Every structure is written in C-alpha cells, then in structure tokens.
Length: 432
Image (cartoon, rainbow, N blue to C red; front, side, top):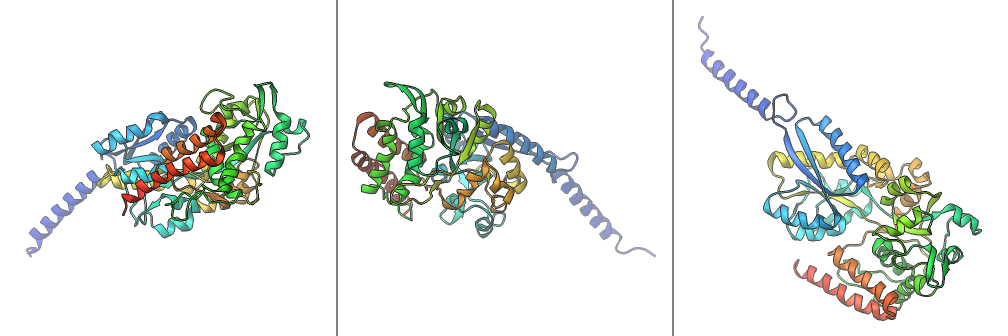
C-alpha cells in the first residue's frame, strides 16, 4: 500500500535535518562551530590581571563556544581608551569600572542596563552587600562587582610592641599617642613616620566618610544632591586630619616616592601605620619585609561611632554587545559574580566577596587579615560619586590648602563645598 504521507514525511525530515544542522552550526560549544568572541577590559593591576586570566580559563572550559579576549591598559589612560573606543563600536563587550565612574559611563552611553531577566534587581539586593546599590541608577542596575572593599588600619606589629602598645590602637587618641611615639625625625627630616599620610591614596575617603561622620556631619544629603559638610563639624574633622601633619608631625606629604609610596613605606619598615583598602592585602602579603597586622579603623571624635568607606570595581556590559555577544557577555558576567569566582578573587587579589553568603562565612569573619574588613561592611558608606575624579580633586585641594598653604580648615572646606556642589548641580540638571 502506498504511503500517502510519504512526500510530507520526506519534506518534514528534510526540514528537521536542515534545522538540526543549522542548530549544530550555530550552537556554541559544539565541535565545528565558530566560537563567539567577546572582549574584556580592565586596567593594569598585577593581581587582578592574574585572577582574570585564570577565571577566563575556567569560564572558557565550561563554555567552549565562547572565547574571551582580555586586554589591559594603564590606569591613567583607561577611561580615555574607553571613551575613544566604545562610542566608535570598538573595544570591550564587558568592561571593568570603578563604581564612582558609573554615572559618567551611563551618561556617556557606554553601558547598557543589565537585563533584568538575567539579573533581577530584587535578587541582587537580597544576595549582594548593600553598598552594591551604588551601581543602580534610574531604577536599573548597570554593573555588578566580584568583590567589595573597605578600609582598615595596617600596622607594623613589632614597632607597636617595641613602643609599648599591645596591638593596634582602638581610638584616634591611642592612634596619635602611638604615632607620635614611633615617629623619628631630625628637625624637618623624617627618618620614620608614625603614620604615612596619603591624601591621594585612601585618606580623602577617610576624611569624607569616616572623620566627617565621627565629628557629627554627613558628607552629602540622603539623595546625593547636596553637599552637607560645610559646617563647624566638618571643619573640625578636616582640622583633626591635617593636624597630623601640621601640629602632631606624625607624617609628611610625599614621605616615600610613588603613588603607592605610603604602602611601600609600611612594607619597608619606614612607617608604623597606614590606612588602606582590602585590595592592598595581596601586594602587602607578597612585598612586606615586616610583621604586619590589620585592624578596624579607630573610633573617636565627638561621636565615637564606627564608620568606614566602602567601594568596589564592577563589571558592566557595553552597548557594543548585541545578539550572541550579549548572550555571551551575560554568561561571563554571571560567572564573574558567582561564589566560585569570588572565593578565587579573595585568594588571589585579597578583596572581600560581594555576596552576603560569603561575607557571613564564620571562617572569613575570624580571619586575622580579612576579618577587620568584613566586620566593617555593615557600617561602610559607598559615596555616590557623580564625577569621582572631580570630587576627589576637590577634597585633595582642600587638604593641601590647609597643609601646604596654611588656609584655615573652615575656609578650605567652604571653597571645596562650593566647587563640589557645582559638580553635583551640573550632573543632576541633565537628569531632570
């Protein structure tokens, strides 16, 4: 008997075969298929470069249809390269950026919002540290971090012990007492500093988010639109910090050469204490010639509360990622923000995990190095910068005006507030 459905079945078989063959050609990870190539950019930082190279190797092993090209650039040239490449349709599909740059990246159109079906906002806020909400703008998330950072006091254990101190100072009064005892100088020449001041390092964050709050003033309004530190409390906090150089003489600007000179001074036994971020742990572990420790930042001032500065580098997806590149970029970003990647990042880079589940790990909280950073997470403030570079310079200029030119702290702070308010006003005026 003739099969009256034969031709139909033949056509159906041919279509199915064609579809299957097409699927084989298009499907990533199947032998013979061309891999989807995406490009990842970050700035040059040895421990981060090493970590990303290994994470890419692991990711590509799990996703054989995707290839990730990793490119790095000097920090000073990084934003310029992004600005020159992304608008022209070149450069990265996934880009690493400091969270304080995010408003400018969004404003400039470099990023696309994270797809909410892949990164639901409610899930982000439930699973990540609260400071990650600084990556949310206009109700959308634009980037996510692998790790977050807080500040801590790094100290030379032997120096403090020799000076009669058992452990790190817990208050600013104890800090000053220890730093004065450990400073060695002949007239104006310092042989050793009790504290390596670094306004351009992390000290401008120390003034803004720690001392201002401990002296009784928030740096900005809740909505991030107004500067609120131009008051007697803010001036007293700035004066307390600049007195470390001008009055107590426990340190001096540019004591040790280089952008990380303050850190190098600690590692070489020429500074008793520094304030630095958890990102410095990897460098200090590998380079220090002294026995060092880490402690939470001291309390002090009229309002001896604990405060800290929190920050993070995040990974965002640029507007260049479309179609299969976007799918690959989403997969890569999910991998970079997984618990597995965060544990590896902690081990290699020394930055603490961004996911709450890992930050609450009892073993990590008890760790003598990472514990103080993790303990600081609940009271860390991630400044909402609309122009991180410009706002940082404003605070640096205020500090330098007091130290180098003898400008009264209140006057320096009033000038800073006026300049910074204009930066905020210009940014928010564009978003009305």
